[in-house]
Length: 146
Image (cartoon, rainbow, N blue to C red; front, side, top):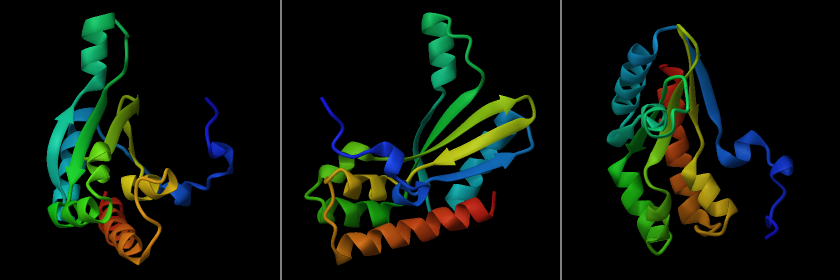
């Protein structure tokens, strides 16, 4: 199956990529990211450590890697309405923290709202544009405070 878009032609802004580096240990970085996103208006609906699971199940030898499933309930509710409920397949908005080296953590996020529009799950209309903008402002605030 061919991919209907050329990923090499996408600009990071097309998918709302955000990255930051934190100079702290992994557990402190996860807690810091959780607090910053909560302060920006997100709740953390789910969280887990893929590295722990993979290391346990398949002896992967992965460095610390953690996923925080962030959600702003008001925006999520609007997104469900704007996408005839399809947006739920991408919920929550994940923020990933991985250890690049001891004492240095990478924080990474892509906008599920932008991705949904790119793949046709969400309409390319004013309502969705407002949702993308509102979510983007919340994420920008969080990353500014990391």
